[in-house]
Image (cartoon, rainbow, N blue to C red; front, side):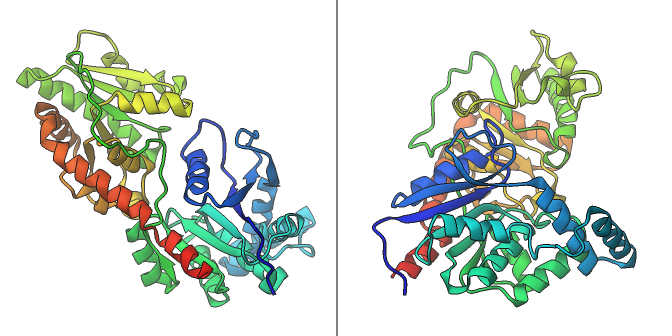
Amino acid sequence: MVIERERRTLVIVERKLAQNRGHYHTQITALRTMLPNYETALITGEAYDGFLGISAATLATSSLKGQKLRSRLRHGNPLERVGALLALLRKGLMFNMPVSAYGRQFAEVVTNLKLDQSDLIIVPTADLDTLESSVDLHHILGDAAPRVILRFLNAELGDRNDGVRSARLREVQAKLPKRVLLFTETEELADHLRKEFNIPVAGGFYLPCSVPIADSPEERVLNGRFRIGVFGEPRLEKGSSRIPGITTALAQKAAAGSAGPFEIVVQGAAADFQKHGVYEALAEHQASGRAVVVSPHDNRLSPQEFARLFASVDAILLPYDTSLYNLQGSGVIQDAVAARKPIIYTKGMSMMSFLDHGNGLAAETDQDFAEAIMRVASDPLTFREGTARAAAYLQNAIAASPFLRAINAAQQ
């Protein structure tokens, strides 16, 4: 029998939580806002410095290493199994292997905080390790375990080995407790997981990111330049290596057509803009007086600094790699939709429900991206109605979240 308490507890698990880095901290704030009647506790990783409050537990990286070896021993090919066996023997883990990476720690937190079925554990950036740990938690505590909600963001699920990942997922699927609920951010990823693995997962679990949803477009003084934003830490899958090529193509078209001037706002570390950095080739565009000027900005900005920089641009550039982003979502897309900014994105990306309101343009080649930038810059007001429709869609998608519906149904 569960004794109802005046106030329930929400435990948020975020191993990658770090100050001024990524959207991880915004997920904490969003969940606290969406569930105001819950007290919150955090389970974090080793990089966490306490900026959002004291952590109830720290998930060590070493736990992942042992679990990776265990999964290779159980599901790998013969060579992987031999390698894993030798490594486990060498590390002295062979006869003391936990069933999951964090199941025991989750159970300890539940016990220490005196949680019960009326409480929640949410993992907004879930993977196979947290999925296996959630199943393990319910095996350890049985009916006394809280409901666990997992939100997957990409198809790799934290394991790049296709064969091992599939075997792990099918093993978990066969013994998945009813009180472990699975969600994805994008509808595209949910469709993929249902078709490939027949697991009960719902898409559309979106969380507000760094930018609040604007009631109206922010009027910006152009100062003679149309500003295009490239936000986030540079990564290969985000098309960072394409930015120099797109910039060159834009500069050529601007010179030929007497268009511009343009300013490309690019986030990155100082080394990214120096010799051998991903943005080394942008150096020639940093001089003033050009048709296309690149403006470098630090990729470790405070939330307030990021919001100000985001508001200062006129359009968002997303030359993402669709081999990954055909299923995975992007926080920058949500920020752009919330801020009512036109989006220039790679054709074939996911989150098309956010991009098909007349609020952006798709592109493939560097020339396509340059032409799309010029088209948006030539008449930004053309996209005003589309960006308004997209912002309204985002607001409704968050309010009608399948995650909230599941919680409300369980409480009735």
